[in-house]
Image (cartoon, rainbow, N blue to C red; front, side, top):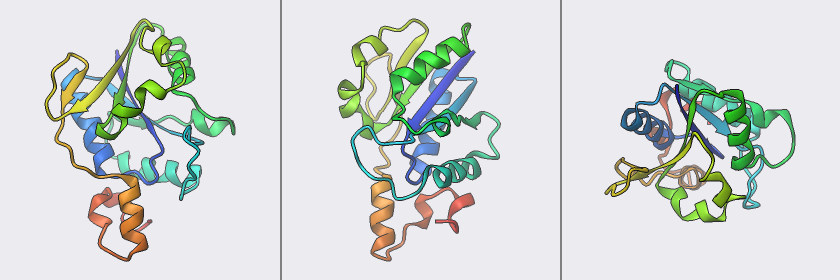
Length: 175
């Protein structure tokens, strides 16, 4: 099987996340995608929504898509959840499968700052794949840059400006 992993803060999840998962699934013929919310930020930022709320928002946003699921391993401890450790656990849990870690337009610049990045990209049965408007390598797939970020949604909401159509319809009234 080919398993896609989409990790992040999802503070809150938005249509850019859902589209990213769909484009990656199509481009790499992934069997399914696991959404894994961070329990803490590796960059020290505070989340507006609790991990439990973010998990609920993801659950409701992907609920009707059988190819999407939520992985709750980040709920099991209060430590920083590192991508490297998650991938190791998944490779062990799924010894016959290939793991594809999905990175959106806004995450490309941060990859080299990840914990044990050089070791991560050398792991067997692991592939890092990235969204690009102009894919040039085998690890990039086409996706238009929607330029939607969780921080934009929070900013619009705080200023009482329209933001709801940037969210999956299932959670528009929850946020």
